[in-house]
Amino acid sequence: MPSLSFIGTGSGFPSAERFFSSTLVHLGSIHLLVDAGEPCVHLLRDRGNMIGEIDAILITHGHVDHIGGIPAFLQGAMLIERKKPLAIHLPREMISPLKAWIAALYLTEIGLGFSVSWIPWNPDAPALLEGGVSITSHANKHLVDCYRVLPGADPSKECQSYSLDIKAGNFRTLFSGDLASASELLSLVVNPATVLVSELSHVTIEELVSVLAEADLGTLCLVHLSEDMVGDRSELQGRMEELLPAIKDVIVPEDGTILDF
Image 1: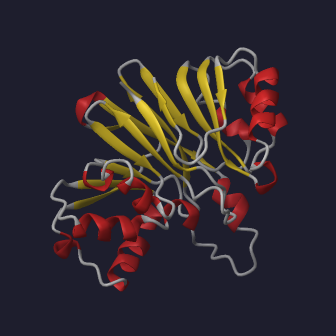
Image 2: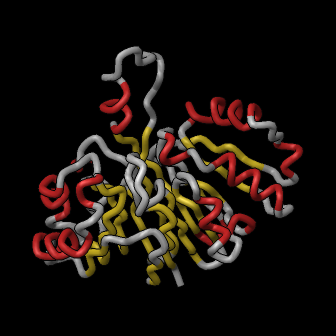
């Protein structure tokens, strides 16, 4: 039975109530971690020591609240003597910097004791995993909007950022990642989906409702909430249910929420 375990549902602003972005996706015998915001390794230990079982980590983009837990994950996997190979799917521009960061932290890929495959996203082309699972990345402009306006921004950076479409049989789950505009979801929701996990920090409620008004979605999960929304879960959920009556379930998960499908 497919399921989602929400490890971290917070935004990029540090919060005592919600940790950084990380969601565990169970698809039969395949286990995927979508983003690896800290402190995901500690919370994964509470999920039955999943750091030894995850098949692949899927990174949507290079902001620290989405990748900051990778070194601790690798160190934790080494300490429990993991042997299972690990695939890390991520933006191509992040591979060299992440490898350098891991090396700077006195970790070596040989010393880990298990193989790590660094696989760059090939936008719009499905990556095929065992068990009939496919993952398709779709480029968005989140980093273009966030980074290139900063003083001193490096113009050579490609600002690669992605939304994800994960399929296993009849189960289809979409992850918005972080967005520049809710309209970037239009190409994803043109076909039916079991669940959409959408951020609500960089887009407004009104923008999201406009895009999803005609979408054929079983469940909408709202995560990565802006700081002013964190304390109003029930109010937000009720408002979205009212605005999107065609969607069967609207959920505002907390860290630790598990959904079975």
